[in-house]
Length: 523
Image 1 (spheres, rainbow, N blue to C red):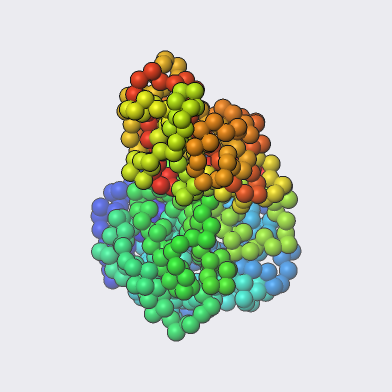
Image 2: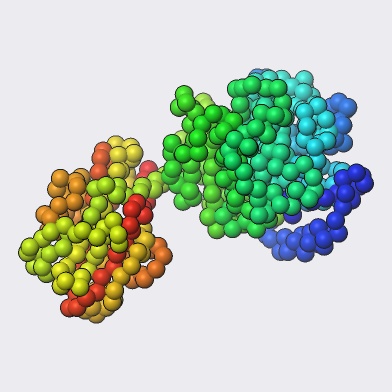
């Protein structure tokens, strides 16, 4: 299993039998995974010996695409526990990308003599400090790659999964002058642990420190004063081996190193997964994070030949319809000038509602005597018949100007959060439906006003919202008319109403605040 484990030898690194027992069960389970054959390639994985003093006693493997010219980038990719270079190169998609984007691939490999479960010893100070152990061995491999292949001295990157991800953090901290960027997949912050005991806690439940505390650990690992490597962070939301808290802590560590805060400049979805980008004072993206909802411990891949697809499923390499290696390479800028995705697939953005413009309007069943509701700040936005016999309709505002002017909208869904309610407006009368009207721009003056109750919509009844009495629910996909009503240059407003007037008190409050989300997929 690709996460840090104590070694059986040498004795100075300790050993715990429970790890071996757990490993046996997990490896047996992994044997049931279907692992397709790797594609044939002209170039192949090669072992290299004699690359220096090798104080960490590691093995060196490399993949160099045929005809690779000098001056191309170098990517260092480090496997997880129970893996090796040959089980990590093709599976994660890095070999395929090396061919496509024309870079050299270096794959350090752990020896069982160092760690019984082939984990990089990311929790041993002697292996993660500048000038010693496994960290120095990796740098010596990089020097050998430069000598043999002529890779660019100023275009080096490092990534890894789990123990390899934690070792990636260690490399970026110990040798920030040697890397332009890194990517940690299901790993931990730099210098989270300096002993085996601490390692367990760093993995799960994780170590919660302030950004300044995390940043100081990186700055204290070398005399380097900047510039610093950029970082891409990937984490499964249901990972029980490396707790999801580590994604947040990594973001805090490296935003602090870059002198910026933890408020993302971009918060959207990519491939359906939450994605954030953090920029420095100059507006340069320096940290990004992906949270792969519903994924456990492993590296995300998306097997196939389409644009953005890469990798193949294997043990701890999980097909979740997004290939981490592809997006990491893009974040690093390795795709510049190669046009690897001439026809990009659909993109997705998720927009929160503009609470300052939202509200609800109450009126008679025929729309007479309309007035704005006054309980939004307490209960949220009301829809349905209130105890006063008035019928409520809610209006939500979304800034959809981030969509390209020429975007072709493919799908839209609205998600709502239940705040409170009374009765069953979906059942009064039977077959009642909570429906959504869409307006390109605003129903009126954008801020809530009585006329919004009956103002004409660009498209009426574009979607329905299923019955819910708690939590968050998503609407049905918007109709074609609803897709066309999304304003690419400004505001899109949505009105929530029941199609039939309830005969007695029956309502739902949604929100409050900016709790609604509009998810738009486009190309």
